[in-house]
Image (cartoon, rainbow, N blue to C red; front, side, top):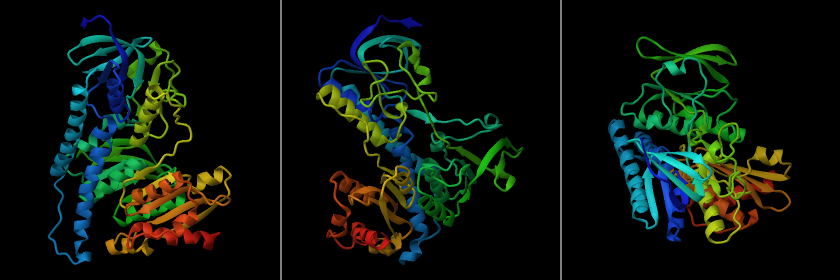
Length: 468
């Protein structure tokens, strides 16, 4: 191994995700000498195995689904068949284009050095970078930003290590359609992949140990999503745990299950394990620099994203909390404002909007009904089905509902769950209203163009009086 002497930088960024990438550029443009370390690919989870590939594939699945419904719209088509290899090629092109743009920007930015390799702390504010050809560089800096993201969690299930199984990363490399895809976990990732592969043509079974899908959502939301997925032919098994997994001589995967009705067995061709995420912090040797983590490996930070060691920050998924691309990007804004603009930005009490890209989408902002009740809020709820929305009727996209939570004293929006066509976009409009502190009556009485989805706010918020 060739060891070079220490190289001094103003800042070191470990990982180039949705926080690290813009932060590196912002610091370099201010004249900081920056070192950016990436293990394999720039862009982080979002570009490589998250938003970009999954939403691209979901779009392919949506086209297939709509094509099969063509007769409802008076359109004649032939047999609809999905070429998974071509869908994956389209996805790969999207990834490569995004990744290349980021790499080009970093390599062309003055004051910035991009290096590929494994980063590991070797002392306080000192990082060793070992490349794939076993060359090592030792870097030091007064500021270090950790943006290493996370990876799919491997659960402790008997026999799992003896069979082939997929993660939300590796399933993106399939070129042949599974005959029967079994998915462990009933969270956001599971539902998106489950509906996607069902629409591609696979038989799909989702196994969830809890009493409902999407455990953090209100029960009526989870139940409605379950109904929608089941209507598309997806089998959902709640209150079910996997005891053991084995492989038959013909390659079929055999699962021994424990259910609220007793023991059961299930077989399938492929297994997707989607039971959570684990932070990429174990290999960093954080102990060498005194940065503390919790028992799951998430880096502990204060409201300004500084770790337990001054000058060392953690951004994005590796610090825990809401693991969304837009939250990671907001982490960048917090650090940028505080370090470069003498600001006082904080992550405390920031809103966390998100969208589950099932079809229809689930757009969520603020408090759910169960969260509002747990906090002891005095609130009112209004809810209307998407089937009464004119635009949804025109599109034959009438599944789902809109639900809002309003403070009973102030008439301010506390939260919303929009399960319907373009649910994320409708939710974002309500988020803007919350940012502007508009009382719900302003939305009830507003004039929106007909026939848009937003026009339904009039009916939705009129329900507030009827149900209060």
